[in-house]
Image 1: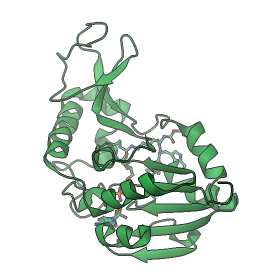
Image 2: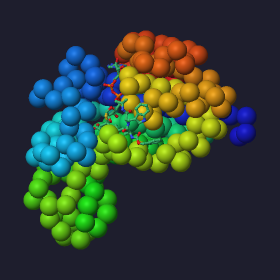
Image 3: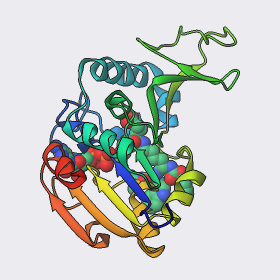
Length: 229
Ligand code: BJW
């Protein structure tokens, strides 16, 4: 299979927009008047944990109400049928890629349906609300469970695996992300430097649009199936 190209796909909030999940930086990108940079930090969690729990409770509940769209489904088809290397790296914390059937997937910014105990350092599946009173299902300690989400200033997950895939990629495709948040915003440059062809699929040019060899602008649920076919 050495001559089958290796593909890395990066997805962001824009791929879930047509499922009904809000993006972060668009006109509807505020949550009760707060910018994501104000709630998605370890400092915000120390300062006002109730606010941060409420932010993720609302998003966890909303994510359960929506369905994968044609873009998630097309990537799941690609995953099932592509004979070469493929890694889908999502910045999204919803589970729409896996609900569409994608297996070769990494959640670099964590998952809404996961909790992380600060007492015993274990991670575990989490459904329903989380709060100050929540007890860890592993060590039973209460009050030390936080959303398993990568906040600003924290190290995104699986960076070694992602870097390796980017270095071996022949094609890098970025879908539905503004290119405002690092290190994900820099993946296009790494992949390009290592010889990959680069494609951007987004509603509008991202902050790193100049680094893409090919740019397709419009809704992901239309453009991603077109690209996959
Ligand atoms: C559509 C559409 C449709 C709409 N169809 N498209 C280097 C330079 C400068 C700063 C830094 C740097 N390195 C690190 C930093 C600091 C910081 C950072 O990047 N700050 C910036 C604000 C400048 N980064 C970090 O702190 C990260 N950690 C880190 O860097 O650790 C050290 C390290 C060093 C070296 C190597 C590795 C690590 C951690 C970042 C954590 C981000 N966390 C969040 C919140 C948590 C998750 C959650 O609650 O959901 O993750 S922030 C938020 O932004 C969320 C997202 O995953 C992330 C990206 O947003 P995304 O997905 O791009 O959404 P939007 O809304 O911005 O864009 C949507 C796009 O879709 C738009 O363009 C629309 O047009 C489009 N669209 N509808 C197609 N239908």
